[in-house]
Image (cartoon, rainbow, N blue to C red; front, side):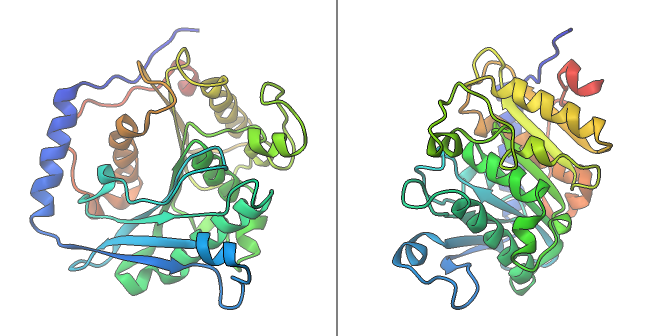
Length: 295
């Protein structure tokens, strides 16, 4: 199989930053912090009170903007919510989410939390000026796994009274598509032993899922075959009849590939009809997909 890789250079990255800064001169932003996203009466334990919170960063003098829900990584064992600086001043809202972590909670606790945070965003973003029809979900590593699971397996958002198909797009970054290694650890299964069951995004491929952009690091530098997992995930989504799934592989980057993933992620959101809510990218080269993505 011929190998074609997504290429980036510093010049284009700097051009993107300049464009965002120019756009930021027209928009002011606000961050509201420490919001409990569980429905009233459901944060019943001190740990839920501590972890089930989010921050929302949004344009305060603009309406109808797209919003990106961001799940941090950390193997479902560590990490803390943030509003990544690379996503700031782009004309969009960003929701940074905390969720409960293993071993303080076991599966499906973190999946339930992720779904509740997305449901909160869908139900509340309009109060902040955002468009509830333009909610995208992303996350890196463990956050990418959560993104795929709640977008593909509709039961998690259904438990929150919400349809997963209301999500405008899913953008898992270097996420597991098999059953997550921490879920396997809970069962005494080593991380090198792959499992695909009801807790794997692969298990839930369906033709009517929201549009999906998969981004990984270089297959030779990524951890635990993460590129190959995502390539197979894309293939099986297409076999199932999904018409809008794309895979990018970032040459020269390992698992810590969030920063170079931002430009193609925002371009993809623009292509999904969100261009009026995202600062335009300038001088960035067109993205190229791995050969596997084009078949």
